[in-house]
Length: 622
Image (tube, one colour):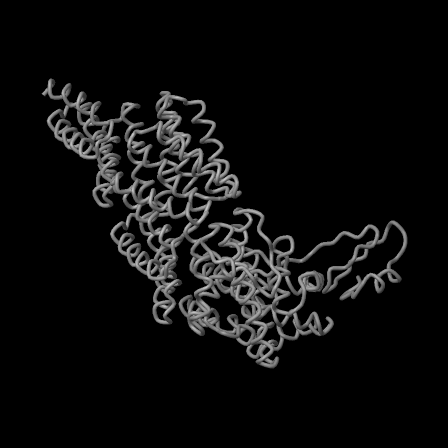
């Protein structure tokens, strides 16, 4: 047994020779391998093993669910380190009269402690001494990075962030991170990405507190500057031309993003860090909050939760108003309006859009004006005001054209194509959708391409080209999944299901629509939920389940009445009428079908003629 070895040079002279010998070597460092060496890294205990250790030391009832629950929470607070678990369990063991409630209170105190090291073993001396042995054995430069990592607010750090903390270059920072990993002071959670164990983070922060405050302050400023500018660069990649180019310049090097997928991956990796910074800067220096709001909102719009996004954006709008920053105020209101129409809050969306529009026009910001016209157009599209939606999108397209904004043009064309699809003008939808797809491809924007392919699939379904529709939908689905965009994926499952229904494959279609509905409800996307319910109802009718179909259509009717989508409301009433007719309730079916026909006629939609014919046949029975 060779205990606490330092390096390979120390080990090799002590190794016995011959095939019958076995040497066990322990070390605080990850040693370079010698021949026939097998590394066996010791990780922290699993939650189950840690709980068993705690219950064994304390002598508590291992079969009592309440005892196991509080034990597992204490083990998690100990970071699942055997030394820490043993120390805390030893303290509890000295109080055999404590009830589960009293141990639970102790766990709550441990969770609330700002310095867990001192709580773990009274003055923290035993755990701290174990950490000191590793920390004191590394060179000063590496010690500095370890201390600075305690200043980082997130769960993970890479070479770029480490370089910002140190004020050095990413290559040198990457080398030191690798060395800290070799020293077992940090864990590697992905290639090139590391984190501190929770207790080591407390230890690191305690060490950093002894450094000169101005040094720590400058390190924090450099790190925040890095995240602000890199987040802005990611946001620019997701929505090109909507972020001022100057926002992406920085004195610190950061990752480059080749496309929107890479930008989104970075935002997702740094989600916890960015959210921590938003909270921290809002509390301490609100003006530093504003540059982070837009890129974080870009992430939350796609990944949710929308409630958090709206909270942050309202915070940003209030801050911008307080500090007289009208552009930031308008941008926050604009993104809020986009989320609100997705969530079915059309009145709030329209209100915020008009506020933002006034601000952009005062600033003479034509791109901002066009963006708001698109938002207003989307509300009009969602509430079946198709003429108004077309005018708004056309106006936005003209402004984007004047500015040479290819991204804006692609968005406007996409929406114009959807208006034509909704009104049954399929031949008119082809050109704007193809132009949109070309623009998104030139810009390398995968999400925009996927959304356009989805609408093209819908176009081909309506025009009877079912194989082509299936191919386009499959391509869209793959791109949405590469982007990990759940809303787009659910929309595509709905479209694939609709194509299957036309071909008579109702059972498979029903499964897809139900999958989509679950996702829409999870993310709170009301337009998708409404469409899925109507398609579920249609599939159930076709499989001979009129009562279940009626329940789906009734739910769709409720949502449509709530958010003002008259087109889908008419679809739901038409479905309800068919369900009632199939179970013999002809009077109710006639009433529902009459209302559906009225809506189709008021909207001047092609469904009106077929519905009138169906109503006449039904009245003949009545």
